[in-house]
Amino acid sequence: MNELIDELRAALGERHVLVDGDLSAFEQDWRKRWRGRALAVVKPGSTAEVAAVVAACARRGVGIVPQGGNTGLVGGSVPDDSGTQVLLSLTRMNRVRSLDAANSTMTVDAGCVLQHVQEAAAAQGMLFPLSLAAEGSCTIGGNLASNAGGTQVLRYGNARELCLGLEVVTPQGEVWDGLSGLRKDNTGYDLRDLFIGSEGTLGIITGATLKLYPAPAAVMTALASVPTMEAAVSLLQLAQSRLGPGLTGFEVMGELALSLVHKHFPHLPRPLPASPWTVLLEQSDAQSEAHARGLFEALLETAFESGLVSDAAIAENIAQSHAMWHLRESIPLAQAEEGLNIKHDISLPVSCIPAFVAGTDAALQAALPGVRLVNFGHLGDGNLHYNVQAPEGRSAADFLREREAEANEIVYDAVVAHGGSISAEHGIGALKRDELAQRKSPVALGMMRAIKRALDPQAVMNPGRLL
Ligand code: FAD
Image (cartoon, rainbow, N blue to C red; front, side, top):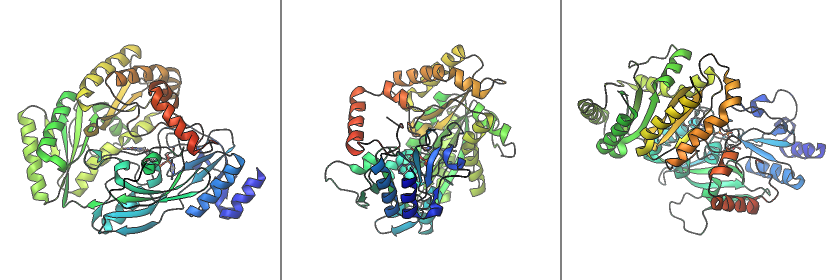
């Protein structure tokens, strides 16, 4: 393998090929659940350099693990522990290549951090609406490879719907320039959509052309206490009928989720008292703040009168709005502080969510007495983060090791029974690979494997992940 390292150094320069020292930032995932060992960590600075790395690895049949911000939650962005895989970090490729205001598009390197993309769009008075709690460190390439969702899917769609074109390095080291800004292009199979959501198993995304939207005139946020999940779903329907496309966020947070935030981050203000469920609503308005406020007040008044909401607070300014979002976005961090947990990123038809939650809560409590159910998520998209935390006082690591399979079976059986998906937005990675093999239709799996064999016959791209 010395020969490979020499070739990589010649292509990228010595300092961009790391083989010793502390590589844990690349070899360990965000949850600290997976820790691997890389043959080398390489940091190409251009598409041509990515192609050179891939070609050098492919010639020797060496596996390549693409990595963006390493914020993925399913163990897809870190190498296994064999010490034989090359970890390819895209973070040096962080240029905004161009912005076409008249076409409402922007073309960026795959290693651009999501927040920088949002800021570059805002600087031109436009909006790139993908938004999630990891936006300060996740990259566009990682967002597209995992088809990330986030907080505004109900209005703008997930990462797939925000991308018009891609540049990809194939598993053979060729460059496919598909950086189109077209909204219509029916010229055969949609290769772009094949790479989006492929989790680095079909090629390396090196650039993307993204859709931009007009920035709204006003964005308003509110919190509402609701007594039951049924009431939360009814509030969603009411909000959709009153605000239409102006409703850009509808998040639900269970009381245990918020109490963990309070426990680990007591300095964060909590505007409303404890309630079984708290909903965060976001409204984006094309007219004005006064117009948005009027709509929000009328909506919440109707919700009070019909008993859907028992308490509510509308943010008075941007600082209060940020504080409300901060509460919601601190839940995964608070859970991480509390210890490893059994994560279920699931989606269901919204109408089935109350029955799913009631039935699955009861089944888990019966099978795993004392278990703590931390439930929150993007209710507007039918996406729950239905997480299972060890009973109070029990070692989180032991609980995960001993009871994860049982908890997964209960949750995923219920998800399937309600017509849902075992992965809404985080992807499959290492975490759900075996679950996918069991639960996806054999016909679908057969087609997925055929695509993988056709594009990556040597299986060098992110080996052992997804399939
Ligand atoms: P990584 O973690 O580096 O990689 C993710 C996957 O993509 C891996 O399989 C990797 O091999 C592959 N990959 C990375 N870059 C490329 C590339 N250029 N080409 C090909 N393959 C590549 N996700 C949501 O969808 N919605 C949320 O609301 C959300 N909230 C989150 C909150 C927190 C606090 C955290 C830590 C994560 C959250 N996530 C959420 C998970 C989410 O998937 C990631 O944050 C993000 O999309 C991954 O981007 P990344 O650059 O970190 O990718």
